[in-house]
Length: 47
Image (tube, rainbow, N blue to C red; front, side, top):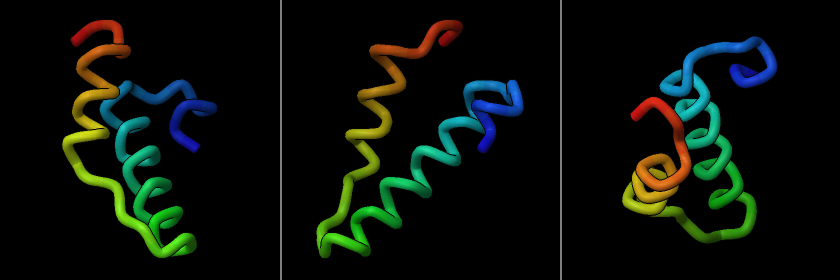
């Protein structure tokens, strides 16, 4: 995972987005890109 490797926040976002997509497939639901954008705009430092 990118966060464990000390990668930049943008790279971590890729992992989180992919995880949301896979979780949506497993549970039969989907996550909107706007949710991911909202999380990163409110909680990420350096943006």
